[in-house]
Amino acid sequence: MNNHLPTNHNAVGLQLTENTYREMVGHCLREKPLEACGLLSGNNGLANRCWIIDNIDRSPVSFTMDMEQLDHALKQMERSGEQIIAVFHSHPASGPNPSVFDIEHAVYPCSYIIVSLSRLRPRVRSYRIEGSQAQPESIRIVTHSMKHDAL
Image (tube, rainbow, N blue to C red):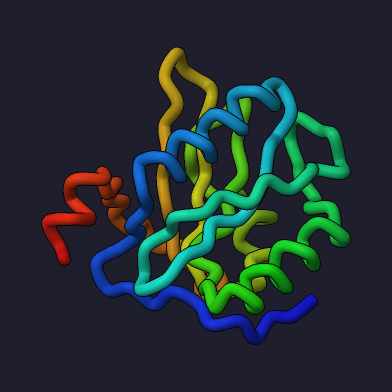
């Protein structure tokens, strides 16, 4: 596994496109009651691609990314000149807060997103994890028209 991909160090928090957000949350909803997982990638601090990775644990309380799929996604990102912006997973029956296990197993210097499915509507939270600390960060969903406005 290549841990040396360029990563997102965006000071304004996590930014992702509306389509990427919908794809990520949709994947989590389809996998419920099991935990879902994956990666978000993009350029210039904006996540615009969702990589769905199988959870080989097939568990409602834990996830382990399929290493072959993970390696493929990371290689494709590198070939495309993309950065890993975030790692995401769902909590089907609990809140959007990282567990001790989540914090201990954060290996990439990027955002970590938790999609909580414990209520009627999904709750999505993002964190920067350094050492044993998880700091919440803002999430900004960029619509198609907002991207054009920024040009």
